[in-house]
Length: 87
Image (cartoon, rainbow, N blue to C red):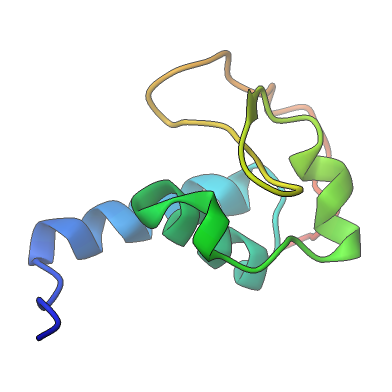
C-alpha cells in the first residue's frame, strides 16, 4: 500500500521545486531535483543538457550526474547570476 503524501510534504516539495527554478533549472529538471531532495537522487531522471551545466555548479555531489543545492545549507547563488531559462 502506498502512503499518500501529507500536505506538509507537498508544500515542502513545491518550495524545493521553486528553489531549483530560481537557481535556473527548467520546470522538469526542477521537479526532478525536488523529488531527488525528497526521495534520493538515485531515483530520478538526469537533468537535461541545458540544465546540466547549472547542476554542475551546485555544491553537493549526488548519485549520477546530479549535484544539489539545499535551501537550508550552503552559500546562496547571487541574484545577479543570469538564468538560462527566462521566466
